Image (cartoon, rainbow, N blue to C red; front, side, top):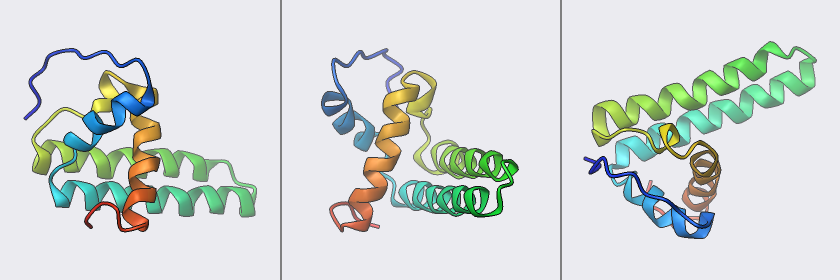
Length: 105
């Protein structure tokens, strides 16, 4: 579980190792990956259908899957609560790293 100590980061490069440390549990990472995959699908639907409501689905699926992973499996508080922009970027970089096989899935 996270220590609860507020950390400051000078850059995303400095933040990302912390972010990965908050995602050690493989089920949490799988849930993140699933939520991000659904989000990509919903974004594609929004663009192809012209229906902007799909963007809401993208937002909800991305965060719902991630937060379930944190609260029930990782047992920590999502980094997005204290570092929303770095955390958002971290999710996409972690997604890419999982796709490339750099992080176990």
